[in-house]
Each structure stands twice: as structure tokens, then as C-alpha cells.
Length: 64
Length: 476
Image 1: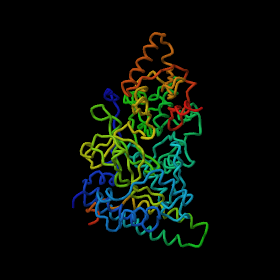
Image 2: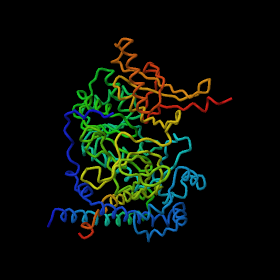
Image 3: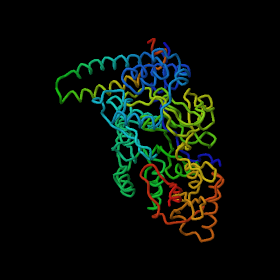
Image 4: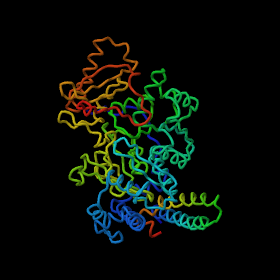
């Protein structure tokens, strides 16, 4: 396996982890606790941004 | 005038493309891959805005654009209407405070930023989501990581923190994202108190400042008999933004501080930095001006002729037009910034990356341009002329109408303390050399007046050295 494919695998795996984390953060945002919900939104925003930042860059990552 | 090549024997910082797999991948993208990534993000952005932003929905309807059917970046550039500051101000007036371009629910706004209002037209207002707060941090962290800042480093931020500006909040987020220990000393302390604190910190690795403030800081240290490179031997990176400079000045700064000078191009519209010198510094390999490479996977840049609106060719100066690919609150889509930059295509940039670039040290503002006796005179060009002389500490200029109706230009210059011992004849010859250099770079003869340094203002962030008082001359 080439270095690029290894890197693509890792990038795709990290991206999938973040997508799962976003789904969990979305669930937390449904909490009825007014003190915590803002903090959950804060956390969700960070995860959403990281999903943008780590978006698969090319076809190799898409294939991984 | 071409500056001598950087002679400072400074080692380059560790390679960001070795330290970050992600950056290495972005650096390895072909131009076609990079543009495919841009298009993918753009279509997501436009599709979202079509359902969330009345301002952009109206613009897409006006142009007959269905964002789900946009086939290429070329089609976007050809069909999507440009926006400018006046459009945004009108939008804000009709739907206060954020306008129809907000694109997220008002309750999702976690940070409010405004532009400086120095144009006199009014201040644009931007509502940023939690997601965007992180993105703004990332868009500061990115150029600084590229410039050598690493987790655990000590960073000194000389730009005033907080308030309503993007530059007040982005650096703090950016430094936290990197994992650096940050001292936000901008605005909070006098220059001498900043120097005292930095000396107490001792092990400073990174300094961020406006071009002008780095000049002020350096000048103040020299006035106190402190040699920057001896006072801060651990310093690896000086990072500047916001204003142009002559290469002679950059050479002196690197020699005095003993480290590499890096530069970024950013704005509120870019939500942080959109381009930087990466790890290359502000000099080209031949000693001329270096390049700032654009972060095109986050921001779509066009550089256009300000009148024809056609893309400028590589090597030409044009107006920066910006589209946010990743910002969700108050994004800009084909926004005319008014910033003037010399464009260099990725093919000519010679970095080995498929990233387009703009020239270092020459960013100007089309609306700052002074029309003097039929000449287009840029304050940045006068800065470059004046500060090519290390003997000048600061200057201020004004254009006014004399009692007989003529346009006159007065430039007040203050010398550094090192010049205090010069005799009158030598000083007069120096003033004439400065005057001649200004004429060479602007085609305008100006009157130079020598004054004391204390008579000129000290700028904490962006310098405003010029006043156009011609309107006052015609008041009855």
C-alpha cells in the first residue's frame, strides 16, 4: 500500500470518527438542561468545524 | 528598487508539511483536485444559503442560478453577482442588525464582529456561529503553524484583543487551537510595559503584530539600548499583517531580531487569514519580494481588474474578491474587498504546490488611493519610500489646498535617536534623499518637514498616516 493510500485511510478514518462525534453532540444538544445545552452547542460547533477542516481532500480519501 | 537579498543566517523553521499529514496532503493536491474540492464546498455553501439567507437567495434568483446545478467554478464566477460594502450596509439597514445574509438563526450567533469603519461608509456586521468561532481560530492557527508555531511554544500577540473586530478574537482562538501559551499584550500595555513583560517572559518563540507595530516595538527597544536578537534569542518567528513595507525594512528587521519575518493576508471577510508566506519568509530566493500562498480550500479568491472586473493576469495588480467556503454565519460570496494585491498564479509561484499566490508587502487599498496632481498615489508606496531609510522612525502626511488653491503635500518625518548626532548638512542631504525617493516611487514632489518623534502618533495596530484635507480647503 502506498504512503498516500495509508494517509488517505487515516484521514478518512478520522473524518468518520468526527461524523460520529457530531451525531453524539447533536443528541446532547437535545438535552433540556439550560445550563448545559449552550456548552453542548459550543462542543458541537467545534466538532462541526473540524469536520470541515478535515474534509477529504481528493479522490484517494473518498475511495478509502 | 530591489533590496539586497536577506543576509541573515537564519535557519528555516521545521517543515509544516512534515509535521502535518493534512497539510502535506493539501500541498500535494493537483490544481484539478484542489478546484474539485473548492467546487464541492461551494455547492454545499450555496445550497445551504439558498434555503437560509434571503440576501443570497435573491442574488441567485436574480442571476437565475440553481445552486444544485452549478457545474463549474468558471460558471460561478461568470454568473454569480458580486457584492460590495454598500450592498451589505443596505442589507443591514433593511433587516437590522445582521441583514438577510446572516444565513443562520440569530440564536446561533455566538460572536459578533464588525469591520473598522475607517472607510467612512459604515461598519459591516458579521454574526458568527460556534462553528465559525473555531474556523476563525483555525484561519489564524493555520498560517502560524505554517510559519513554525508549535504546541507548547510561547506566543506574544501585540494586536489588541477582544472588542468587535475579527482580529481581536481570532488570534486568541488560533493560539489555543495550536496549543501555544499566549500573552495577549496588545492594547493593554504601553510599548515600554510590553517590552518589560516580554523580558520577564524571556523564552518568547513567536510574535504577532501589525507591520507598523513591529516597527514601533523595534524602535522602542533600540531606543532603550536593547538588541532584539540578544533580548529574545529563542524567537523563531515574527509574523506581520495588515500593512505594506519596503524590503530594506524587512532586511533590517530580520537582522535586528535574528529570525525570519513571515506575513499573512487576512480580513474580517476572510474570517481570519486567507494567505501567508507559509515557512518561506517575505523574501523570494533571489532577494526580491516573496509570496503569500492562498488557502484556497477554505476561501475562493479571485483577483480582478477593478473597472473591467475581468481576472488579472499573473504578475498584475487587481482587487481581491472573496468567497467563504466554510463559514456559515454572515459568509461572503463574491465580495469585492477593495484590497489591491499583485496576483501570481500557482504555476508562476514556484512553490511546488497548486496554490495561487499574492505578493508580500504590497497589499494596498483601492479606497486609500490619493489622487494628487493627476497621479494615483498609494500610501503604501510612500511607506515603502520613507521606511527604506533606516534613519526614519515615523512619519505622517497630509494633502491640503493652499490659500492660492494649489494642492500641497506635507510629509512630517521624525528621525531615530541614532541620527541625533548628525550635523545639519548631513541631515539636510538625508531629507533630500528621502524626498527624491518619494518622487521616484510616486511621481509627486512633496514637502518634507523634520519634527520630533513625540509630535507623531504611535499606532497600536493599523497605521493611519495620511490625511486628505483638500475638502476643508474649499469650505467657505
